[in-house]
Amino acid sequence: MKHTILIPIATLLVITFAGCEKQYIEPAAIPPALMQANMTIKELKEHYKNTPTIVNAPDAVIAGRVISTDRHGNFYRTLYIQDETGGIEIKIGKTTLYNTYRIGQEIYLKPHQLCLGAYGKMVSIGAPSTDPSYENGYIDVPLLVNSHIFCGEIKTPVTPATISSAGEITNDRMGTLVTIHNIIYQKGETQYTKAHPEIYPITTWAVKNDPDTSEDDSHYGLHTFTLNNTDIVVRTSGYAKFAETPVPFVAGDRARITGILTHYNETIQLAMNTDKDAVKN
Image (cartoon, rainbow, N blue to C red; front, side, top):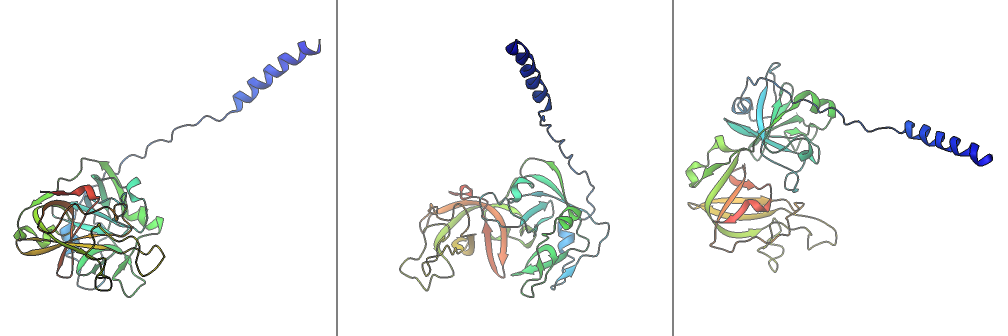
């Protein structure tokens, strides 16, 4: 008799608790922003007055597609976009940006009250800086990010411009994605080359550990190539996932490299998204 009573009760309890289980509901996808650009990247950069410049353009909207990724560690807390007139670095100030801003994705930027600044004469846009060493800072407050930067549709990746002569490296192409053909490898070094001649020139893309210390103290790798007797430096962060990957070139080899074209003062530089962007020509 007791068993006869308990069995229905146990069955009832199982049914009751099963009914109380929470079911996961997939959150609704956030629809891409649909905005109309009324200012080009080139026009935005022309606002810069060789000093920290707050953009005063309440209705301005820029549209560009993402050309950089921090997935491989060579870009840090920053994002590059480009349109048909040029490219620019947006100093967002957050990590794992690749989860939100995908290669090829349309990005809308409202630059009003943001700050244009330059580092080594290379213009970027960010927040007003609190550090006198830098002309602008990171847009790292979520409220600021969400009120200035909007994600549009994910489109196909930007096709890099082809460069095969030094004369094609123009100011309008700075901050854009390019592929440089037939550049000739010269050497690899860091800012510590002279201090450690016994281990330089370096043969990896960067230096992950400073030989002067037992700590993880990484340094940029600077690999010099030439194109029509013009130096082009491929600059790689010591924190890049491919920092310790051997450079697949020796002096005199010809290469084809894709990356973001930049400059530091008069030095032309190229920053790769991944080491797979460098191959023998």
